[in-house]
Structure formats: C-alpha cells, structure tokens
Length: 138
Image (tube, rainbow, N blue to C red):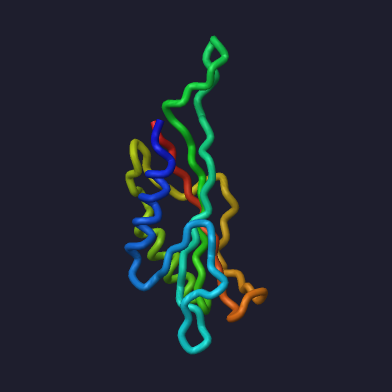
C-alpha cells in the first residue's frame, strides 16, 4: 500500500511550486501574509484517509493494494480575479501529476464551485474557491 504521508508531502511540494502562493496543510494561522490590507494568495490542503475500492475477498479480508484518496485544496486570494488565477495555476500544477502508482485528477464526484466565495468572517475579507481532487492508486 502507498504511504499516505509521502503522498501528502508530494502534493504539498507541488503546491509550493506555484510562484507567490503560500501553502498550508490543514491549518491556516490567524495572521496570513498581506500587503496594504489585502491578503496574499494561499492554498490550503484538506486531506484525510483514503478509501479502499477493492472488494472484500472470500475470506472476508479487505484487499489493501490500491485505494482512492479524495482531497480538497482551497484557493484563497483578495479578489475574484486573483483567486481564479491562483486556482488555474494550481490546476496546471496538479493535473495528471503522478503520485506513487496513481495520477491526480479532478474529482468527478464532488461538488463543483466555479465562482469564488467571499469570506467576511475574517479580516481582511478574502475570496476562496474550493477545488476537489482524486488520486486512485493501484
């Protein structure tokens, strides 16, 4: 079975290659980088445990040589154009990325959001766009 910690690190590393965008792994500090009252773009990886797509064998055991790992990356920026641009850069970095024995692709079963959402619960306010991904290993 693939090592989840290694795969998570590979995703974080690729997210970090997008110029000018800070990357967080499941935790965003209260204070994020900003300039003149506007936050700078950042990504947040939200990942959990994978599911096993394999059927249970005749002896009742779950096969564990492959799995489906769904994860979300929230793209955040100070305005909608910056948010969309950062999301596009992320998509170009992740699309068809090889991780272990799998390939990262957009999650076909997830909710799709095309318009950035305004979050006014934090200061300064920011726009965010959730992106949903799937990795299937074999």
